[in-house]
Length: 133
Image (cartoon, rainbow, N blue to C red; front, side):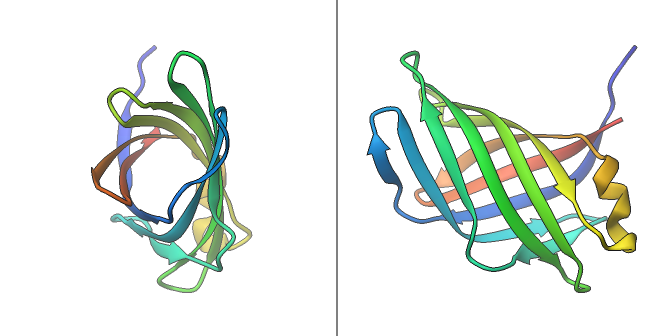
C-alpha cells in the first residue's frame, strides 16, 4: 500500500504574542489565516482561533488548533488539527481535518490532510498542506 500527497493549499498564519500559561502550556492566538490553493482559497472568519500547545520535557509541543475560515465564494469551513512542534528546529508536523455544511466543499469533510509548517519570520507561520490519497 502506498500513500500519495495531493497539494491542497498553502496556509499563511499571523500570530499574536504567545500567552504563556505555565512552562508546559502556551496559547498561540492566530490573528489572520490565508489559505491559497487551486481547490480552496479562504481567510480566517471571526477571531476565535488559537493553538493550545502542551510542551513536553523533551522539548516537543503537542498542538491543539481550532479555527474557522471563509472561502472567497462565501462558504464557512471549520478546521482543526493536532500535531507536533519541534522547538529545536521550529518545525511543525500536523494532521488537519475539516468540516463544512456547504455542498460545494463537502469533499473536505472526507479529507485527511497532513501539513508541515515553518516560521519564515517572527510572528508568521507557513504550512504546506496536502491531502492524503
